Length: 388
Image (tube, rainbow, N blue to C red; front, side, top):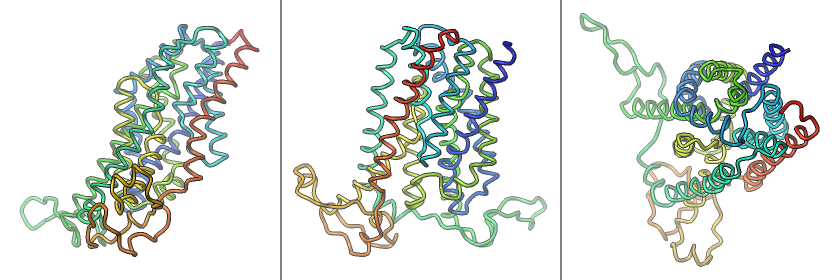
């Protein structure tokens, strides 16, 4: 019987990891694939490798929080399988509505539901986690707004990634020993830009592993059914499988709202969200990549759109400036205006940087997702106490 429950638990972990891989791979590598810098299969392979590194290193801290700090008892094998079921259900519901689910928040909610049903919730830990859930969107918005208002115009003028025809690198066979050289049409700017894109993609994959690998297996680790190393390998394989299959579609659409903004802005969002997520994972806080990504996008748009007004006008509210994507897609050679100066017409009429309704849908899921998983888990473990 125990073996059958364990098989069911591993199957649930694989299902959760598979869906995580489908969404996270698109977010991490969608911009690079969309720009023609990397192939989908290569992106999935890099995703798998760096997810493993993230889960094996920083992810262990999140694993400890999820498996031992949220409630004061060990999660039994049967209860762990039930928790994984609610996590998978949350992902399924989010996929039906087309919203990237905050998996870490859903996982915490399901474990809290178990704790409330058994009277074993560690409210001090929960308060610490929730406080970071509140602060993280503010940090992402503030970083995005600062970059958008003060740095982005100059970055947009100086930094441009182009993909030339032909291979990026070639072998120079003119000497006695072949050595790598630039492709026939490759420039040093293109090479350096490509390297930056790949490094940031790998960094985001590492961050995704640190935050998401524990979500797929922590309940089974807490029960003692799986050793941490074995659990991390199972989660990595499942996430990699999702990356090689269902993520191909998400990479085509660049996985999220990142598909609607320029590559430079997408890289800024990826770097910011990955850094926030990795830092919080390091201190053991379960956090979602989506949370940092969405609010950094909003901050970038707000910061760029408010350049035509002064800080005093912004604080007083003496402006009706609209957030426009056109401000981020201005031609690289266009003159960079000073803060408070009017932008050119061509720079401000390309459409919205973000859809406020979409942002509200994301934010609502950050509240509804963990709340629903908590309520469902609480009801289940109250009615079926034998799995505790």
